[in-house]
Length: 384
Image 1 (cartoon, rainbow, N blue to C red):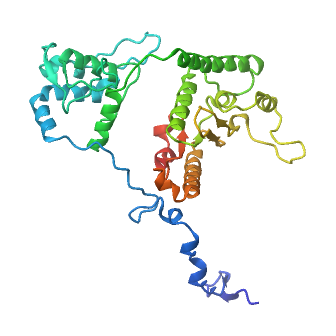
Image 2 (tube, rainbow, N blue to C red; image 1 turned 90 degrees about the vertical axis):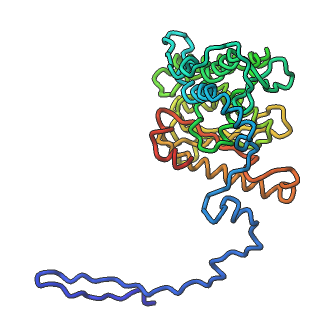
Image 3 (cartoon, one colour; image 1 turned 90 degrees about the horizontal axis):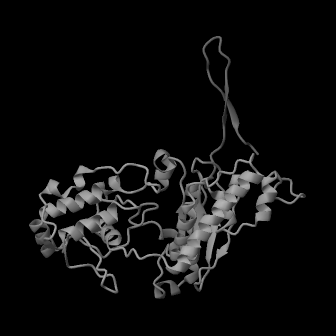
């Protein structure tokens, strides 16, 4: 078979001719070979994630929060000075948040949060809250918002919402409906004290994480383990995230995270056997002796347990290996979550619509970022 032919080019004197290799052009494959049979592949696999002809684009789900009504706009105009104060708390309240658990940092004075700056002095004045903000009614069993409140109550709720132990900053979102939804979510949140059972659960997670770090430091002090000291609340946050997502119908979680706290999470919530961990800590491979492989580093261990949170379907959590702190695992986690979503949706078939299930309702991707990676690395923003 003739694979190619040589051709010699003309060169200037003193230069050696260089042969060029030409290959005969292959005939194009038939169109029927390149195009799959549409009837053999479900439509969701082709267009499920592609709206309006753009690859990877999906139209956002419609939400129930629209723009202000005429009566709400009229009330906002009547109390325009209070509107400026409320927006100031939503814009600058995070600057005065009490984020120091030891209370050693001095309280920051934020001039934008002073009511006198906007000409508001009468703290007993009762104002209609229609279209302004949401104040929960403590006397209401269903946490219904107050229709009107005094200026003192309004400021107390604003400080409790935006200047407490947790700060919020979302007023930069351009969509008015989304901002109103977030305003209602954080301002009407019912901050009831934890039940004794919840308090014990939180204490157990924090205590086990701290004991684990102390044990590892004492027994394996020379091993780089990326402990969770000072950030043990991550365990509680993930436990609550897993619980509430499972209650809301999530069946699978694809988790990727940095090195910090990985071993704590694996041996606690993700149920990795301590025997496996200590075997790896001592320098052994996670593969059997007859497998010609060296294994990965300690901070890349994974596990994929089924967590029982008391629902009909256990929550399957799949942690991916993290190749480095460069967040290269983020798009991999997104791709795996998308594949799982498509798989679950296709398995439901015609039952998906009857069950009120849309694409992406059963699998969730969770990404934990370390250091300054969230804002400092392009792969993070590209993944988002």
